[in-house]
Image 1 (spheres, rainbow, N blue to C red):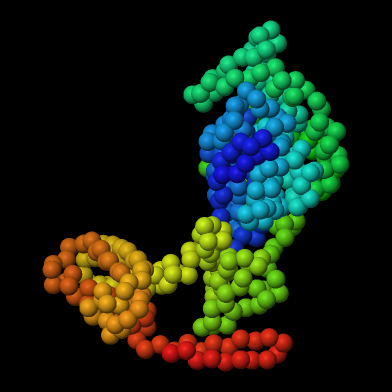
Image 2 (cartoon, helix red, strand yellow):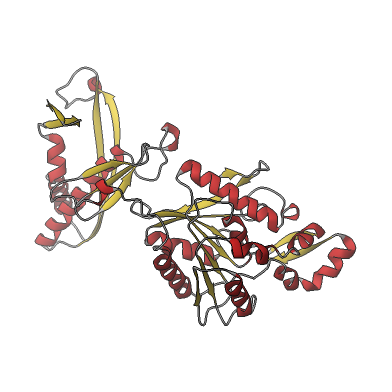
Length: 409
């Protein structure tokens, strides 16, 4: 959730990659739609798989966002986009890509010029001017002019449209602003679109200055109802945008990680950490309540994940070797700190000790003896034994070529 400039709470969803995002984007949904419309959700999720984090949110008065739709218009959509960019900048980083579907496409074209961080803009089935919406509701415009408003039903809900909404659409703002956009533009449009004709894409392309690109989504409908069409847009968009978006991998991150080594890199002087192995990247973080951004598991969760993964792998290898009928393995773990005096089996008698609780649930055709044996094997997993054995941690810290070493037992 974030607040717009009118103090209303807008609700969004941030689709994050499993690795460190290469860029952040905002997706603007279509007229009277929501952040959960298929085109928005599917394209956003596909882009996340390709390394781009995407924020999609509900405009004022739509979906889960506060405000009265009757008081909104195209101009308020643009300012909502600017406020979403500010919220994204505050919590993660500024968006470098704007994507808009249908009327949302017209909105991102207007917002992009006011966002210095935006490196590229993409529209999907967008009208060449917002006034196109008036033609879509032409059967009600006479009543709007006579009565000042009209209530229409879209998506199973009543939406009130007032005269100021129609008046706000009439300025040829895109035709005036697009030639000076100054950012690479990608236009996606289907020749089969019966809501916004392909002619709108032609006008956008002719009005825009280079660098500009056009891709035909042959066979797609206006809403990108077929998941394959959304996937095609996402993959093509990611490939095109890669020429313009900053890949935030500094010289240190770019170096290969040696076999057997794990590197942890602080991100943007925050609690967010990028963890790299020779073949993988993932993130760790802390909850927002303690100053993190909550975009990855915290260190104790990673520790439990290591123990749980090792336990499950060990049981699977043992069951396969014994040819036992184990259909699935679930390991549920929890970390806590308890008073030493409450632990009957601990050597420590004072202060607090760490307790890692591990519950294992196996399904399959197993007798009691087999289940008991699996419980014994679970405690033999290498990570479990490492945590239980005597441990030594050797630390070295460097500054200006000096090295200080400590050994902790």
